[in-house]
Amino acid sequence: MKKIIYNKYGSIADLEMTEIVIPSIQADELLIKIKAVAINPIDWKRLEGQLKIVTGSKFPKGIGIDFSGIVEKKGDTVSTFQIGDAVFGALNAMKGEALAEYIVVKENLIFKKPETVSFETAAAAVTSGVTALYLLEKSKVKSGDHLLINGASGGVGVSAIQMAKQKGIKVSAVASGEGLDFIQKWKPDVVIDYKKQNTWEQKIAYNAIFELSGNLPFGKAKSILKTQSVFANTLPNPVDMLKAFFNNLFSGKKFEIIMANPTQKHYQELSEWLTLKGLEIPITKTFSFHEFKEAYQFARKGGIVGKVVITF
Ligand SMILES: NC(=O)c1ccc[n+]([C@@H]2O[C@H](COP(=O)([O-])OP(=O)(O)OC[C@H]3O[C@@H](n4cnc5c(N)ncnc54)[C@H](OP(=O)(O)O)[C@@H]3O)[C@@H](O)[C@H]2O)c1
Image 1 (cartoon, rainbow, N blue to C red):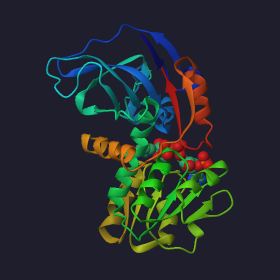
Image 2 (image 1 turned 90 degrees about the vertical axis):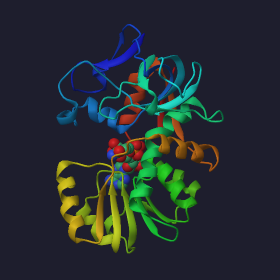
Image 3 (image 1 turned 120 degrees about the vertical axis):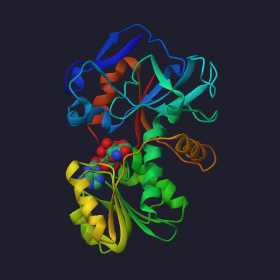
Image 4 (image 1 turned 90 degrees about the horizontal axis):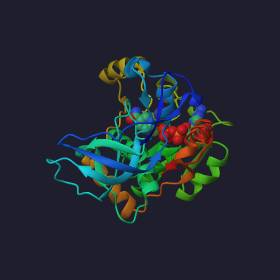
């Protein structure tokens, strides 16, 4: 089978397609024939060595965490799934190797794909959608609150706007370029162009901020947060973790670090959003498996609205 790997930290040029034997499975595992893989920023952060403290120096490494596919084989103790089931899920963000013709997973990592949802959409929904669910839960925002989404046109941002608006939350959405028009369909209450305005100089006090851009430090965000509020950051670093710990002992402006880890409860909730609550997962462009380098180059350059998906 074919699998995309890299043998050193570097750039998209270092990705290569290799031919390996289809892996065997243990009694509690399933073999999934991949139908679609969605790209996430974590993929190139790992490839570029930005997370090497965690990802280590053992190579080759695979790439890709969000996938959908079909159960090809199952181990004797697997009870929830049958051969032929269409499923979707995410591999561990620090070890993902979903960009391959087959992968091996345990049953807690996958969920039955709703029939009305395409393989592409299911793969594209996982990390973005589950992270949006985490953000809403951890920030405790409720109907009538005012929320700032900093990075509203990306994968996580478009899910977060839709979920927040359906819950009656007032949303200020920060984006740029094409993203500014694109997000209008979900009717954000305020739109901020980060290339023209300083987000932290708004004359609005927020109940919560979702920081998805890596460009809004807590120190600056504090000036636009209410006395009792939450700053939820998806891009944690060790300094932020310490800062959050000490800040939260004394301040009503809480600093929450988000580490999305999809569970069966999240997959269930996400499936309901996709099938019953009209959650849209915009896919900007799809590429075929053999175009994996073009796909990553397209996603890596930024300025993209929604998701980029590789199909098999
Ligand atoms: N901790 C976790 O569990 C977790 C889970 C999922 C994602 N993440 C991280 O969260 C971040 C967002 O994920 P994503 O998938 O939504 O990424 P994405 O699709 O690349 O979206 C990033 C968004 O940030 C915007 N942006 C860039 N520079 C900005 C700035 N200076 N001010 C405001 N907005 C800016 C981009 O807009 P333009 O394109 O217009 O520049 C885009 O809307 C990524 O860094 C990802 O690694 C973490």
